[in-house]
Image (cartoon, rainbow, N blue to C red):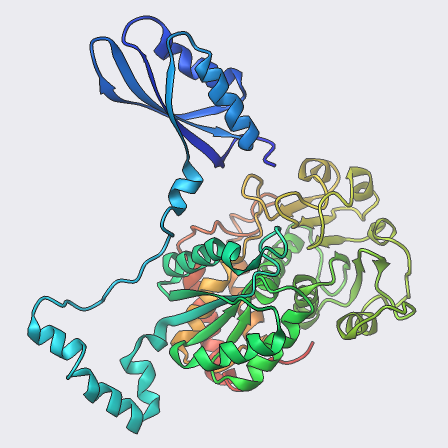
Length: 470
């Protein structure tokens, strides 16, 4: 639930009021007295007796929106006609579409775009398969693939409910890197079926973006697809998150004057995102890390370790700490949370080292209140848009795929991820850098291009080397 009115819960109320009297002036007061924020007030129809008005306002949640409507209805002379949820209106009919890039105005154009002319192009590709990137959409297309098992913070809600999110992801690809992305929502959570399905649709795409597939299934899906396909496979929940976290941490440590290899890091979350963040931090030079899951610190003495947790135990927590998260945070220079809401409080952050860095990235409710964390930490970042330093994957994946597609890369390498993080961090200049600005805005014009250029350059010499283990 939003703590302040948010555009995510904005509504437009169409109503009528008497043309004379005080009703119009009372509308804004009614919304504000209910705790809402008026963002627009438009007279759509004016008559001698009545006015029809659209009042647009932001609310905290759906119950609060209804309370605002009730308050408006209580204004003398007001008649409510319709209440529209603006977020749902945006999604009516879906958010993306396919458009032709070529005109089809007459028989000649139809004959070249389709039969019989298209047969010549098909035969050219059959003779020289390399031409498929030059003569089709493959050169600029990405499949956004999910099984609906870990959608946002909503959990296992299935492929149909995941579709609006995948549409949104496709829209972001287009907006930020001019890539044509297609939502592929699979009605299966069987690893073999997921892998086989992606394998047989892959010829139509230049890259695969795995999205919202739960751990540990996502690790095997990604690994097997990387072995099978000759196009890059990128799991955004893992590697997109890791890129942005590393970029943000690079700049946060510049703010507090510490080095990555010297700091002690406590990482909450041992799933897909946490593991990917950990691997990339190690590749960048981190050395002293303790990872905690819901059972506490991951260490070699635990008897519940699967392959992923065993790798974590073997590479972290050298002193064998076996306590809980609160104990692991004490004295730490950096806390990174990719786990669950409300698992720490301000008092816990107060036990961290001087000039601590806190990344509380659970969304929508972080691991610790940002306001409480800011009382004790020097730099605080969240996954939310209503606080400074939003760690948002859209800072990474559009540019990463732009670079991969431009380079005609066949795989994603660790070096590419590091290059992307370094480029993203560098978008923030020394003059701009500060506790409240460690990552650029998602709308910064240089972000996608800088990340794409770094990946493209890295891919030039590493495109076929594969992902290396940290």
